[in-house]
Amino acid sequence: MSQIPALDVVLFGATGDLVMRKLVPALYHLHQDGVLSPDVRIIGVARSALTRDGFRERMHSQASAFLGSAYDEATWQTFAERIDYRSADATQPDSFKGLAELIGKSARPCVYYLSTAPQLFTPTCRNLADAGLITPESRVILEKPLGTDLASNKAINDEVGQYFGEKQIFRIDHYLGKEPVQNLLALRFGNVLLEPLWRGQWVRDVQITVAEQLGVESRGEFYEKTGAMRDMVQNHLLQLLCITAMEPPASLEPDAVRDEKLKVLRALKPITGAAVANNTVRGQYRAGAVGGQPVKGYLEESGIAADSSMETFVAIKAEIGSWRWAGVPFYLRTGKRMQEKLAEIVINFKPIPHCIFDTCYVGRPVNRLVIQMQPDETVHLHLLAKQPGNTMRLGEVALDMDFSETFKTRQLEAYERLLMDAMLGNLTLFVRRDEQEAAWRWVEPIINAWAESGEKPKSYTAGTWGPAASSALLGRNGHAWHEEI
Image 1 (cartoon, one colour):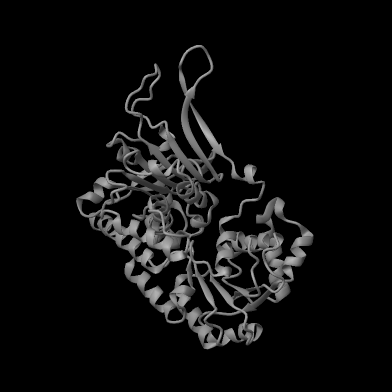
Image 2 (cartoon, rainbow, N blue to C red; image 1 turned 45 degrees about the vertical axis):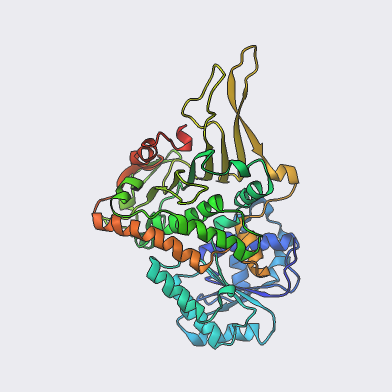
């Protein structure tokens, strides 16, 4: 791996959950692996009036818990030497003076990670500019959500774009940093075996699922303004769809890859009017049990209106209007309080045209490629093989691709890879502005149609796989979700 040269990583919202749970552990691993040069500094910025030692102690008490067995006291002590802290409030320009004094007039590049509410993006960027802390070598990483619709998304990007050029803006989607997603590109474009089959002639359907066992937790007020469509489909699921369906890029240069993803988004057939009711399902969880533990329904959660119509589950049948994918349904599904924590892409291949064996799996896709991102990062290719014995009976077998066992190295966590790429200035795994806008253009008519219909989301019991209508959505085509096969 390339070593990160001297620079400053500035984490805004440094006392928040994302920084402690994901970013600090990711930076610790990069330090532990020797990826960070000795001159890389990590600067936390938040409103809390903490000293440098106080911030280090908070990081130690919170972030170390997320490191698990990777935590090593001696390594942590050397890692902590990189860490500094300054208090600043985005609404108070004068509070950035301390940060400006710390960074000084150094020619070192700065990577600013805005792990804050989107309404603070613009004042933060303005204050950095006014303090003289933005240079042509500076970069800014933006966490989602970037807006609640196309108009607000454009407004945020316009405002940030006043201070940073497009090549300096890194819009993060952590699913793109996951190892199986990277291996999907390698499997598709590095092997002649799969590429000829990766098209409508041989693929029956594609299923993309991101399921969570958690509810809204303490994010009720946020979720009431967002919902599953804005929180998950507009970004994570559509990005996974792009990676799955894109044409081979001319190279792995950032814009070559992102150009092909944009083509997929533009080729998505619009879902409008009556088609919304036929091709989408909204759900909202009610009280039930998850993992054997009773849980409240969505309407009983803190910060949720008693008559809320916000969805916690979405299923969509999407189609791509292209020669490669004409006629192939792409089923997208996400939800909270589901039966399992699961993130996977399933490619169901068409059955053989004629069965010569006594045991046939009529109407059932036995050949399928399952790329799993959660709970484990694996790739399984399901095939048929002869069962032991003196009869020609077939049974399913799975070829498991265990990359960590094969390559004997620790897999990078998503945020490790993305932070490293941002520090190296590599935009390949980050979302370009026109991609975001194309995604919003596709989901916005669906959101508007739901609002205009006035229909409540379909109820589903916590701890299940969502509303029955979700299964019916596939059943109309003679298909079924992966776990139902």
